[in-house]
Image (cartoon, rainbow, N blue to C red; front, side):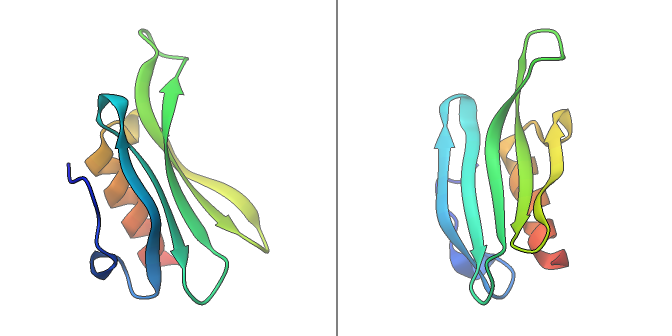
Length: 94
């Protein structure tokens, strides 16, 4: 997993405000659309409902008119590269 992302790797109009790997190679990232107030967030997420309290991610979209929406969480985005892929795909679809 890379340590940094370049804005040129993101869909048009999006920029990375924050992007860092945390402990256990989990990703914390915040992306913002340049022409609107839309944001996509990737945060480490502890899945307490599973044995061993699995570390994974939660990906959310925040839009001024509709609020916060969870796109993916838990084991479907367990690894940082999976979480990044889902976040980028969400940006493409907005």
